[in-house]
Length: 213
Image (cartoon, rainbow, N blue to C red; front, side, top):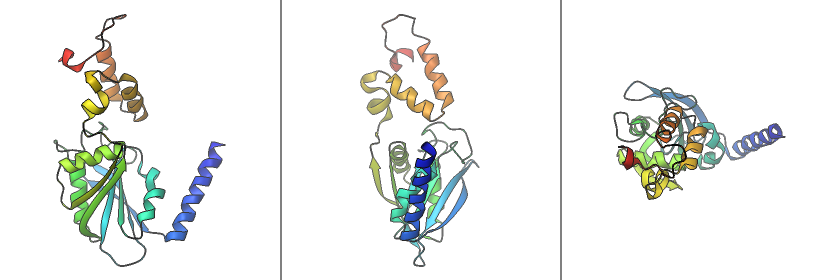
């Protein structure tokens, strides 16, 4: 049953592409400042010569997941969809959102700088995405990359500490662990379990980060 649903979904995506005009597509392995390369799909409009404005999505969920929806914009924009560091076809160790902002690694910034220097980009770039793809946008904006002029951020917190993971100062254990398990973020899962083990068995204490600093 599941296989037939996947087959029908794929067929609908193919039909949509055929009806709306098939963009030219190519996968690039884009280097970051530390030499790590990230898998990046580029879709260019089939009509016109360009250059075009660019719509960027950086995702921890697999870049092929979003192709069908984003191609609806394919007549007017160059589309760029990238697997974040350590996910799917991208190299590196996956530490959720750690490398997407303005720390030692600045994967969002480096990706934007690469895009701006491509012949098919007209110098203007927007970003799009929800949930984890929205969080990568917040971090991209904070890194102040060249060319970024607009963002559409959906259901994504601006502060992971107070708005998501530690609402009221208490760890939302089920939410955090379920998401990290879905992401195969083993290092952070181990960290949480180590912290949890600090609380005595049967204790009514709820772990707060400030109590364990």
